Image (cartoon, rainbow, N blue to C red; front, top):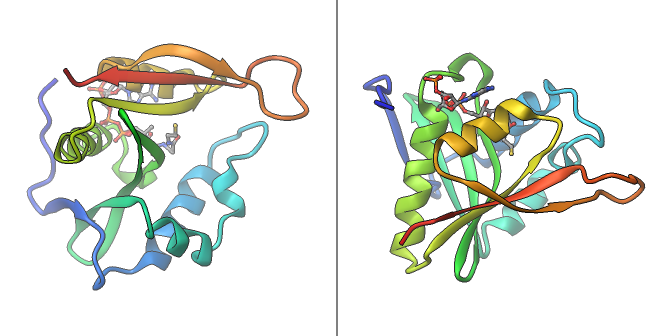
Length: 161
Ligand SMILES: CC(C)(COP(=O)(O)OP(=O)(O)OC[C@H]1O[C@@H](n2cnc3c(N)ncnc32)[C@H](O)[C@@H]1OP(=O)(O)O)[C@@H](O)C(=O)NCCC(=O)NCCS
């Protein structure tokens, strides 16, 4: 797939000059718009939770001028870089930005000498699974949220070597 991002969108690591509240607002807006059972844990996360994540996680963001339009937390879990809270602003979805975020995460994994990308995806969100499979992720396991009798999410992985 050819990635043709708007020329004014830049993907880079979150820096001191960036607005973490804007990332939280984006995550709450985008994940809140998806009917999910149980609801995404990000909806319970606060600015303080996101600040604490920054202690040992790299946050990649996409900026369009002053606005943050996509983000993903990258958690080192050797030999994998675990991707968490990947989000693209609803008005920017299906324009290649999610895939560009995965490409940036791949570069981040290789920078940290990690050889895999990993993540969890809700089984009920078949479109998300297709999105990750189209980038080369494969299902390697399943997880059941507390209180549920059937698996609710898949563990997925992509080898980078
Ligand atoms: C999932 C998400 C990150 C995808 O980002 P995106 O920018 O819309 O995805 P892209 O435009 O890069 O999609 C690349 C390809 O993945 C596939 N794809 C993406 N979304 C898809 C969907 N909903 N259904 C089926 N295939 C999909 C398609 O092949 C697509 O290429 P195409 O548009 O040329 O057909 C975005 O929809 C999002 O932020 N959703 C809300 C939060 C969320 O669910 N995050 C993931 C948690 S695991």
